[in-house]
Image (cartoon, rainbow, N blue to C red; front, side):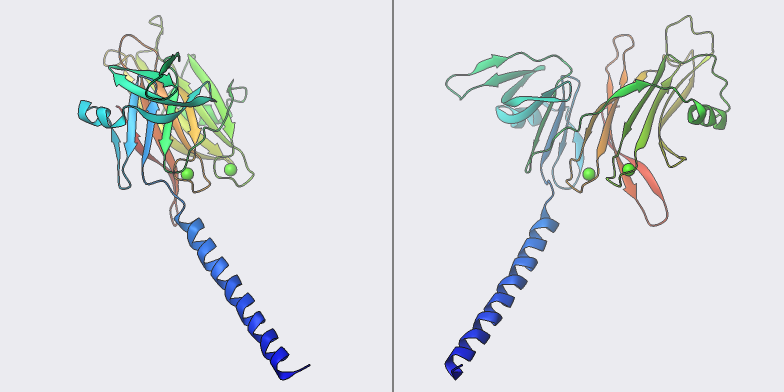
Length: 267
Ligand SMILES: [Ca+2]
Ligand SMILES: [Ca+2]
């Protein structure tokens, strides 16, 4: 092999190693940076939440709504993507297909969810089932000193939110109205069970005369910050004319403690 050929081969190897290092560095940086700095989550006509890169806001101001008008959103109904539509708010949301010149109204139920973010967010399907094993429910009620004669909400949602191939169970329980409820207090409790450990999410226990309570249920599961772990949105409502409450919770891994953190709500 001539000296020139050897030099060529060495140069090619150096170039290949350089290209590989750049690929890993740039690829790694890209993965690290993949997050959402602008997010809008529209919970039907019930609540709209926005994230601006620093903090979450429950939108109540008309001026903020006007900034959200005529943008395109991924509109979901019953956890299924209905389409990517533009939306306009005037006390309630109106959904349109087509371009600015030919807008065609799209009808959605009031339970729709619309999402918009830098990198699109998908809703994760889930099933809500009647609780069959009450051992964790009884343990939680016992810890609050509650002897419940019956439950009006008793649902469990099983899903692997932190992607570790172990399912987490989300329990939704309440003895909230009907009025013939013989107890003199209302309770609404949401908690997660993982590997036998209980993680509190939401607890509201009040005297019947002060509160009607509310009926909790899982509304959505999604990974809005693209970190590979699912956040949950649960709702509580179903009574009288009071507005339904929507709560976004994130499971935080702290050094010694894993716990749910309330991100934003319209409470
Ligand atoms: Ca898991
Ligand atoms: Ca996440």
